[in-house]
Image (tube, rainbow, N blue to C red; front, side, top):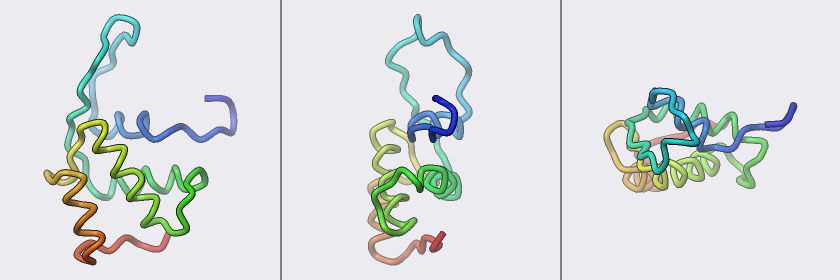
Length: 97
């Protein structure tokens, strides 16, 4: 990305599952089905905060969970949808910033 531009969410996500480096021209349709922690999701959300339209970090975390779902990642062994539901139910509390 150009200097000063924040990277988009997917590249920030592919780093936490610690995948091997690959030749993008030759290897296509990779499944990024790694398991990442909620702390890593919150960390990615903090990096994406300035580009997010959400008012709170919690909203940005929910956006990132949507990205995780499309990549096929799981969060602490749960599906991103289950994690999202736990946040909505108040079982998981996301810090203010």
